[in-house]
Amino acid sequence: MTTSEVQGRPKTLADISLSLGLLFLRVSAAVLLLQIHGLPKLLNWSTELQRIEDPFGLGANLTLAMAVFAEVICPVLLILGVFARLACLPVLAVLGVALVVVHPEWSLEQAQFAWLFTVLYAGLAMTGPGAWAIKVPAFFQRF
Image (cartoon, rainbow, N blue to C red; front, side, top):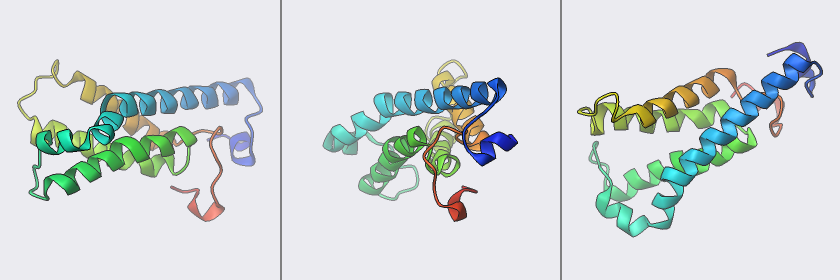
């Protein structure tokens, strides 16, 4: 993060490009996850309860609730840039469980979409939201 980003709005072309790129990545990744996975689970809750895998024996309701949290609430936080790094972690956890526990038989070709999401969300967890994000109190800015 550059000095001008810490102080507020980006001031140089490089800062603007970085901020615009991070905004584009976080909004794109979040909208894709919401549209493809999150909202269908939320809007078809009863159907999803019958279909969802429960790899840790927590029960379908809790497993689905955790998936909806990771795939609906966390992407909304990411779009806003609020707790962006922290919001990436549940998504990465769900992706990790899907790839390693639920679908270990998937080839790289079958799992490519999950791997692309993993790359996007891991990158955003490392970089943070960029300058164009809703500001949170200073105590929470490290998240």
